[in-house]
Length: 496
Image (cartoon, rainbow, N blue to C red; front, side, top):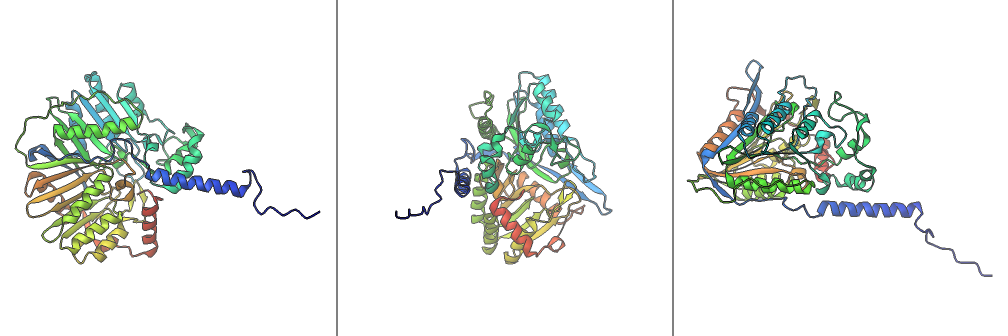
């Protein structure tokens, strides 16, 4: 009998380890492809229409922490007090969207203001005084350690009939796709995280322990990173505060920047943007209390519009393309790693623009010391290729962080400001996180422009305080850390 020809295939029916691994890798790759390119939920990535707003209805708000000549703290804060005042004055709506909303302080040893409890008390009090007023708080599941812990202040809000919306991050694109694809294939289906687990809390050893599923969710590195407050003023006028401040005790000493704008039209843009997040998260959108008809026209001095997600990046790049000889650019960034933004700054310098940047040195994080990635590598890139027209100074932090996210582009007649929650990173600008900024276009010398100029110059020139130091103080030429910064920016395998 002729010898039977051997089967050159694996001959399995799907049970071969090699075939199973191949199928798993194909599924993993498809997961990456889909969840990095899937359509965004409706209403995200907004570029609102420009609306006219008098300069008198725009207030620049700053928080500054530095030291004086004797090394003693110099702290001035305005943002949070304006937020509390708006909540206290509201009669129809308080809508707050804030990323970090908890009482954790870290271990830097400095005294902190209790932002979390102050805000919780203000919201509960407002609801108690005006039971019919809608109060909606949107926040990120990081504050529950992704379901592993329900902090008392969130329970207090719910018990007071404040509507609490926990953002459904699964609907967003994946910023750490190599990990998140695996998480979506396996750990996601193991159930929701439960409190009182066996693992340490990732944010504080003093907080309750959490389960493994909280840690597995954390490593997706995605967030609703917005910082928005929308209210009426009790007299029929509406306004927003948009900025970089988190309602987080450990962040209370951070340097931050925000803007308060009274404008019914801009309030409607903020309402539309925030209700998109509510819908995405599976919650019920309350009826809009905002007026439908525009208010009477007043003499405008500025043009203002709301920007969210990738529209922020596009607006910054568009403005940078216009900058050249005769332009000046002042920028204050907590994180700068986005390759297109860095290239846009360098190209503006090549066309003749004069650029000043204040960067956080990426060394302080709630009592922990960071490596300087990514800002020191970005700073070196800009100083090297800026043709002498880009100057970088570092904010000399002492436990706190330099947390603004703002760029001001000026020509002879007008200043354009883009500021808010978005860091200059791939995760914050490329339709991955939820972010909100505003764009202000105001005449040179108008109050918003003058206030921003004064704030920046005070820090740049150390006027009455010690705030910034020259580039060489934190310069880092390490090739290893440059490769690390670039790899983390490209892949999302990092926290920035």
